[in-house]
Length: 403
Image (tube, rainbow, N blue to C red; front, side, top):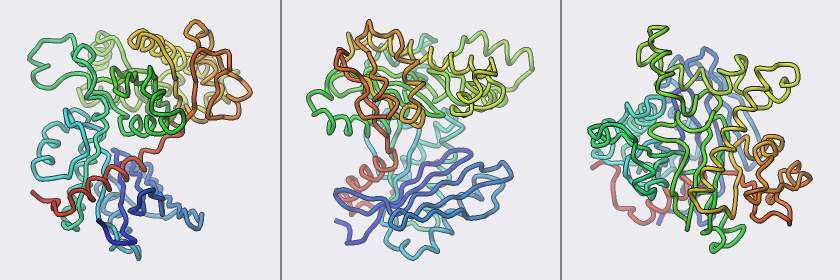
């Protein structure tokens, strides 16, 4: 077991941002600090730290023109903190993990496997791998753990994973994997606490709605389907990601504007979705503020709600009915009007909202007349990473991070 006052560092890295937190290593871990670095590579990076014990929030100026420089600054900043020597392990969110079903201590072999699939998600995996390597070089004695976003969905049946493309691609690993798994794992634990483990094992749809958005169909506690597919760009309309599009549209876009594969990936991940439709913003609150005067903003909101409604209907069919619908993520937790629009007209599925409770973001927002429950559960991916990392570290303390 870890020594008293030991801590765990959690890191969630992407191409333009890094979120991290430090938690006590305890049965019920509390976060000591939470921080995020935003707008990496955009000329005006932002580093905000919140110290939870004192409720102090600081904005720290720094310069970083790319992810490597930002990650280096982060490590140097952490090293200067008085409690850094108490960090015994680091938990990393890894967006892609292929068929890995649980968190794993990062070894040379695992890192090599992740490098081989970095092209699966060029917006996340290369950055996540780089920050692991930076910590390994500077602090090789700290155990590092990979928590895979895809792990939750490894229970999906084959019919939900296979893509209708030539088998050689399937043999190379091109299939539907699903993401937001760390969030979904946390939500299922929180749901079991709220309604009991028996009810949580019924037919559940989890809707993680934020700048990245997806839904998962869960039956008997296991994922049977999810909206995202081979990459996090698939599924429902998102902030700057397209979600599912006709393959012919992809060909047309690349052909008509002579795009390279890299340019197309940039468009699909950073210029489409709510931003692409509205042509102004991907921010939900901004769109809601301007929808009455801006038809493009109104259409962006309408498409977002419509596609999510369709996925709920599809997953209700896949589950053979629906017992619990959970809203989470920044939009799912904090935008009552969006929840209301998504659920409008779904009485046929037993979904009837209590608008008074919905406006308050109450934990239970369905009426007594509803045949099923609609719940709002704030997600906490960092806490889930911390718990998974601590469980592994405490059970295999003698295992070193290098293989």
